[in-house]
Length: 224
Image (cartoon, rainbow, N blue to C red; front, side, top):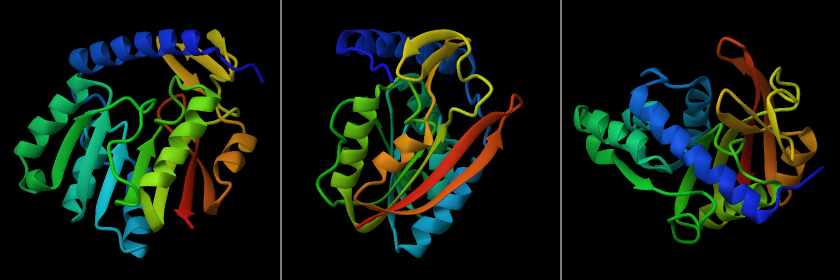
């Protein structure tokens, strides 16, 4: 597996940030208002582990963050796109659970904005398979483990190497391909297993989403 060097990774990340900013600005509410199927699953998992607060990474314009708030969780929503989070803030103000949602502009290449063992649950829908190197993904999961309390739950989804777009478009190395302006790091199963070391890996569930359709895994793991 080829791993991107740090400079190339940062350059790709900067381009992706600009692309997402433009996309959210041009297509507000692009994913609709209904929660994703993984978020519905995650809410059930979070209730089972007694979670009261959720840290969402890559929340975008907030369809899942708002769903978690409606379900009674306190939500800290992060994204590197201010444009997406502005839409989430506006939607939260228009709804009754507004007081349960806070937003923070944050790049997951940096340490997570939370103290050690201070979070009950973490959710990330297709965030880990964005323009991140394998090294950056491992560092992020270590950060998730740092901020989660013992027994806390982490639910995330990624596109995998069985996806129709894997190997298509502009190759950036490290199983990352850019198609239609969006760069995706496609996960092999070995990466999922490596990221679960030191965790209780509960489930790796295959599902499809969108019109292509995109092929994904939904991973559920518990902090030991």
